[in-house]
Image 1 (tube, helix red, strand yellow):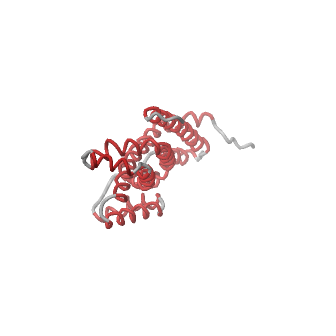
Image 2 (cartoon, helix red, strand yellow):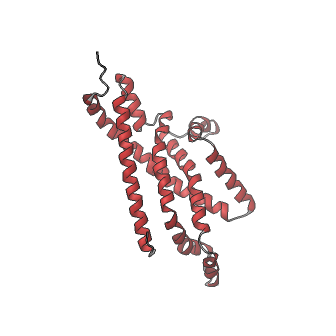
Image 3 (cartoon, one colour):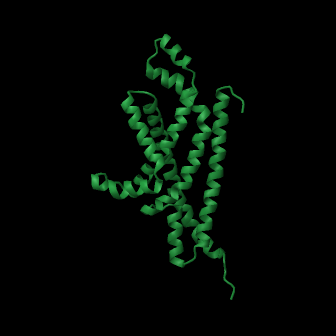
Length: 225
């Protein structure tokens, strides 16, 4: 008797539930990336400014996060931090873990962008008696960010593809939903394949949006790509 590898009826039944779960995946991705952008910028500023002790401390935190697996960090935040009084639900824990992990990587991108701004820009702003905050916000940051948008966009796509790790703390994202559907019917081919299709579509859309943002920023800066 031939084994039926693909069942279209089962795929049709799984599709609406996976589409619903994709909303959770997108929420985790966007919120996690928003946290990563903010945390990454703070890490970058901490490593480039302030006293030496602060630079070393921030550098140690960044290297620790980058050198340990995201899965371990998710477990730590969800199962260990409650022992220290910090208890979060699964979704906020997942968003925080994704944000901190990719914030460490984004900080290096920010650092590269900030380092590429000529020092003469700072000196000119000092000569104009502009405050450090005004100089950073209105002069340095607008020049540092556009060149690093493609690299930040790559981390957005990478973060998106890491969201299945949140299934280990029972966040009902795409992969967790596919595993539940598979366990109910003992057919994993259809839901897992559909999850792959969802990720492919969303990754292509994200890449296209990043290219549009890059072109828009370069147009505003008067650059050609």
